[in-house]
Image (cartoon, rainbow, N blue to C red; front, side):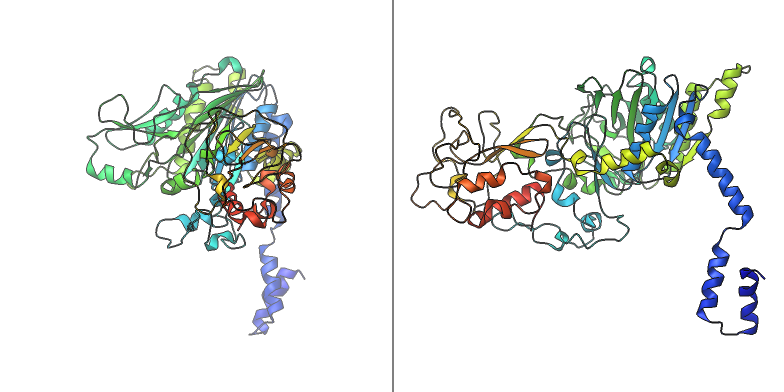
Length: 559
């Protein structure tokens, strides 16, 4: 007698069956039947035949369409990279996916410049930032450096992580973007000879024109290769209200760039500053899609975003505005802010599925023959160009994809790939930008006393001391300008430290490691990896508590 038969009959003779009986019945009922198992196995085998290293590189598989149902950005970008590397050189590939909330920076960008790490790295931050949540996210003390709210406790927040924000560094160039379920990403891979920055953006525009039903709203590709939405002043009041609910003057989509394997990186996608009008009088233009590109000798990649119905536009400015940016002179690619908005509004919601279907139709129309008498090869391409739906289980079974996920998740990839930059608490000859007013409780040496007319001669700072006040050791160099702290950071690691100049003021406070040992302070700072510092106060010493709190706030760590 089978387990299913036994557990079905038991309730008839036992009005109050034992809990174990109910459990057995539940397990038996949930177990796939042999017919279902065979059907599932056939589906898995069929999908595996369509998505594997041999399948994507098959010379006869020249038009490929994939839709990923995973929302893991590390996984989706690794699938994209797998297709870029493995697909046949003559093939064209379309991949569509949507990610869970994440901030994605370009290959050559600086996360300490592009992202408010103090917010992004907190559990449940989206729920806390959401309008009407009532949560106090950040409160500055008089020193301007202390984060005092409950969001420091990373153990709190939703268990499923839906209100967390991941930080991702992609493999292509370009600027910083924000992804969520209301944003669909498209990737097109083709031979370099067929590459054109506008070609596939125009494909997406044609798809959007089929879906947008708002009067006086036009979608187009601009001169910077971005997809933008032009809103006419004659837009009806109802449509204006609907659109305004989904708009934002903050920066969600930023600079696009082209990234070539030959170490050439060129910006291509700068747009107008937030709130700025276009050349057409009174027409407001909003960016709804930004792109990035990667070219190799045999393949080209164009991937872009499309804001359909993101609920997070009102808070993007906070996530993408770093408090450390005014102090950092970076060598990498910096993003340019653009006014952005969702494509539709309350009365014209475009679902991700509808967008995917429209883009797939346009892609097939571009690359599949519409001739009434197609050639045998064209007939075969049409038969193979069916949409393959990718699950996480399927793609994770490919070792190359798993390795890609591991790389993208690693802190060394996210942070240590950052190009060299210099942090300066005060204006210098190389970075004369004005700085925000420093917290009032910083040591006196953080306020320039007698700025020099030119930069001082630099000496060695190896294993030297950092006197935040008083006279620095003889082999320690002071930053130009007569005050402040300067750190050179290469691949996330502090390689050089320049110290505040001696103020010579009678009331100067101590600036050593808390034990009268200023030489130990630079030794403590030099060699540190910024992304591995949990609390700067542990490295600057008890005598510089306020400096530690200030650095914690700028770099988004600590208590």
